[in-house]
Length: 282
Image 1 (cartoon, one colour):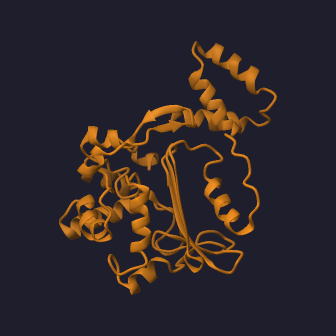
Image 2 (cartoon, helix red, strand yellow):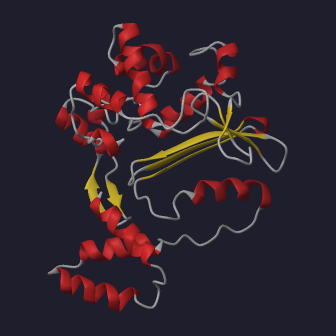
Image 3 (cartoon, one colour):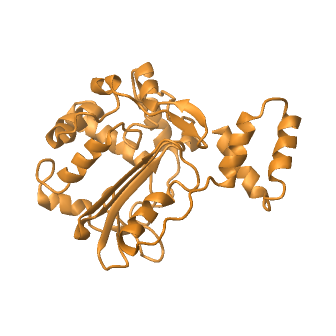
């Protein structure tokens, strides 16, 4: 979203200006000729919801989805959330960044680079209620729920994973179906893994995303069936480099010396340093 539009998650751009910039960008391909996941596409959908319903995006979600599902602790600026504890984020698993909840209430608004495509606050209990709602008629009738999980378009060339309406759908080695989605802002991470045929739901949340984090819910799923020991959880070298750089006081030469002393024998590719630098820039 930042590329081309010139705005990040907490950059407040007037609605008309945001979509003017967005629609001025070139298309990746002609409509109907390809598929690519798009945060901007979800923001467009959020704006369509506002125009059709005459309500704010969050108000519509509360009225049409969250309240019928019994989810009272979900939203962006839901007043109830201000009274709950909020998990602080830890960049590279080490550097505290505060909570997105506090930033939302400080701004008293959600910026369009984030609205509709991510950043929603919730609790594990509410996410479990959402999983239950997806199996009942409280939010959507069965014929519409089925469309959510229909494998509409291939996500990769091999055709091993498909995308439904906001859900990844793929077969498992056990000839059952996996339905899920994950998301992250680079610090927080959430994974929703549902195996309806096997009546298993895995909800995984982290406030300290590092290279190993995203693999953990997958390994948890595998352990349920294969009973193999879980691999050791390790912070990747990119996060280690970035974290040490942030912790090291002094001028750039001192940082360089400390990094060389610590990692020289472990870095065999310049791309590792480039990735660490890009994460620090974010």
